[in-house]
Image: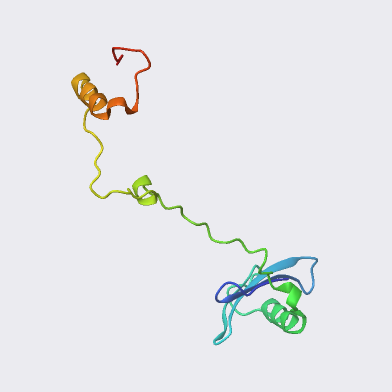
Length: 132
């Protein structure tokens, strides 16, 4: 017998022995706490209507369902989390709001002008020319 209270309506499954033959019938019962039995199926010839196999499973479940028959909560899988794509610009905000990256590479004359404006702060260590 299997009892699953996690789904709505609760699901009760079991196998019931036939009265005269050595045969087992699969019985499935959907049970709602407010409305009672919602749906029941049995693999016997009368399985689409009400049969005594369904009644037998209900009576057995009423007297024998225990806490250990219910599914444990710690083994239930957590729903998969979808990872959000994050832009680097959202993670690392620029320190200066007016900052823009250059659209082109600096020309040789712009580099020379920059070095001259820096002056003696960074000597070229004996080199007269700059290699680009």
